[in-house]
Length: 149
Image (cartoon, rainbow, N blue to C red):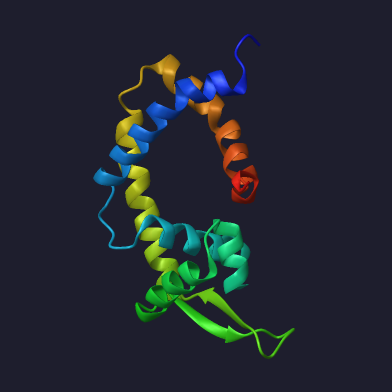
C-alpha cells in the first residue's frame, strides 16, 4: 500500500461530504432528522436503552439526546419504560409506529440511493458491492470518543 490512511482520507472525504449532503437533500422526504433516524435505528437493532447509552453511542451530549428522544416521544416513535435493573432509571424503546416509520423511510432512502447507483457501469457496481463489508466495518467501528482530545 503506497497511500497512508491520511492520504486516502484526504481523497475520499470531500467526495463523501458532497455525496452525503446531496443524498440527504434528495432523500429528505421524512420530517425526521438524520440524528433521529440513527437513534431509531440503534433502538431497533439493539433494543431499549438508557438516555446516557443513546448519547454515548451516538457521540452526542445527554441533553441533546434527551431533546431528540423527547421529540420522538411526542410523535409516538418511542416510549419510555422503567429500567428493570434500576427502578430510578428510564429506558427508551421504539414503538410499533416508530418501527413502521423507520421501515418506510428506510425503503424510500434505499430507492433514492439505488437511483444514484444506477449511474455506475457494471464494473463500478461490482466494485461498490465489494466495498459493502468495508463500509459496514467502518460504520460499526466508528467511535466518537476516539476524536475527543
